[in-house]
Length: 234
Image (cartoon, rainbow, N blue to C red):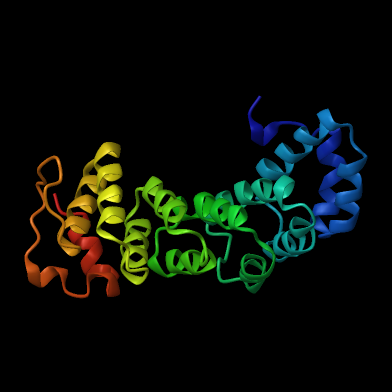
């Protein structure tokens, strides 16, 4: 039986009207009343079935009202649904409720989770920079690692901008280059080459197929399109 024709469970039946009404208090009370073993099932239903499909305003209402109450337990559930919604074109990362959470409620761990969940699915630079701004205050090392794991042009652009704006040391940039080379793949190797050239590193173990004329490096962190074209060179 396909998921589209799967009959709803009792848990789904109970939570659906609460989610549609954006009744965070009622939903929280219902989930809290469940045995611990059933709470995982409820979280899976919320993340995979109910939150991805609900009206966007209801999604953000629930997010704002419920997640700050227990971000450790709830943030991952909402972020899984958010990534699905974004991929389907049904999530606006410019929503003020997300920005308020990141600025006023989120811990560093929460900001890193947010970045790790949403940056990999972002294809436009405006949303990538929006997410980067929400991660402001994260220590450089975990921020850089999270961006490198995404392996996308917008994430790599954010990495370059972060290393430049935070005046990263040569040792830090070198460590990033080595991690990218260890990851492998065309984008990662090209990004390592860009970082090495941009920050004037040498003696990296390996050779790069991407050659970078000096004029192409000028203000590369300030303009996404030239960066993207350079990164995607064969």
